[in-house]
Image 1 (cartoon, rainbow, N blue to C red):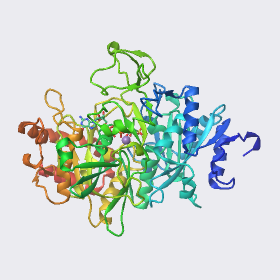
Image 2: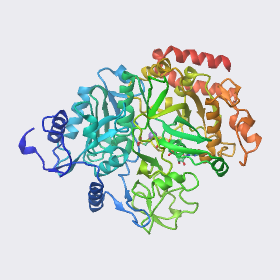
Image 3: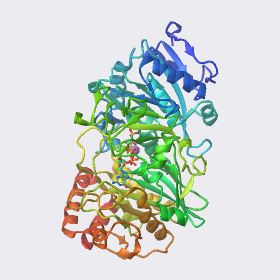
Image 4: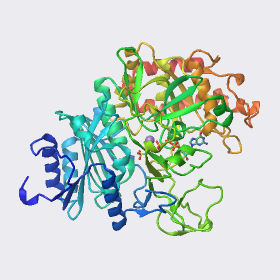
Length: 599
Ligand code: GTP
Ligand code: SPV
Ligand code: MN
């Protein structure tokens, strides 16, 4: 590090690591490479939040919303080319391509570093580098991990301070250890042709250039908490999954469940679910531990699976969210929230499709253009998001910050399927459940760039997030069984089945509690089911439809397993099996043969 290059460090009360530590050496190297004008070490304090948002408003990164209606809330409009994850620009960089496997883009690490160095060189000239020390997971948890993200994006810095635990606590969690994830990020010129999200699992390093979007740029989300963490988990015997964690309470009994649905397929809504009045009156309550990511390990004392949520906030889908569908999410975003790519109302409040039944007469759309209902475009971007701290959630679970996590009784897989896939079934056992999870199919959504609405295989809702070879990932899932004395029951749900008129058959949202009740009763051995080729299924009388506008015929339509359609479904699974080709774990082949023979 040459002294002439040393930019001023702005921060008075941030406790910085000593010059000689590995952390500081690495930061110095990155400063030398990127050449920022100013370095800001983040503290995560309220004063800093004010300083950063004020600066954001001054520089046009944020629009301050009506502070009476939405105290502490800001709107950010991204570059219109940068509104979702870009899987085609996402790489796993390992010495051999086999380590990344057939479902990841791969680059050789030296080549990747060299390519990205040319992009990073001098990229922060005239800009500020934010140094964001953060912890994933409750402080002191056996699985908690430290990361340090260097970024030239004020938006990213403010979002990271909501989504993760930032500040002094990081140095406490790190202690003398040199184990932290090195995260280097620059929005660069936000050119999609020069966009790279590169993961180096063997170096515990992530370099990302050219995008400011959540999953591409907020390291606490998919890059560290899933891709790097899934790799570490496989090596160390634990799991990092794209799962919500919820507590379901009734009559003094509390059961925790984890559920894996692909992006924009209902995790946040499930995690914050409010049961309908008759259930609430009877004492049913759902509380949120996490809405997107679960880190899980086997408790040596009990032999059971436990989970923590590594995040500290929500980066949730906005469209479709309202007082009826998800009141808890509405409460979360009522204050101290960053909105990304929603519409701006004349009174300084925000709007999005599905917020109100009637659209506003006029507003400014997510790109900054005047909008009316006649415009023929969406006012809010379909993947517009809110970033809110978990403490805003009225349904936050008492154990959300518990380093020991919560014990998981059920794992629920699901997808968005208009046809073929029933409302709910239970896998026969763990090994069958892993097969069910591995073959999940779901219609693509606006959360990733590309075509929306095409069915693709999304194993465990992790297709874009497994940081290593999917063969080893599936084997890891099968092997986890041996570590547990009693394992969670595994289920599959589909809230999205449609009738011939193209309408959802199942009301969804809060009413999903009726299915969850059956799931929990199954876990505790007190609900009936019949054996079918797919697994255990509830009979009509086993799911409470009381008070719903659903007739028996609707229920039958929802639960129908059309054998011909299912044969086509199995053919659709070929896509995955062909990709894995000779590498398919033996247990997968065995489970597939069992299924075919049952059908
Ligand atoms: P990511 O944050 O992308 O991982 O998504 P997520 O899985 O948390 O999805 P989220 O809960 O935000 O839901 C995405 C979309 O699905 C929203 O527009 C919801 O309104 C809609 N949705 C969620 N649950 C249901 C449901 O039970 N039924 C129906 N019909 N739609 C739902
Ligand atoms: C998802 O796409 O699954 C998300 C949003 O939860 S992002 O953090 O951008 O990945
Ligand atoms: Mn997600």
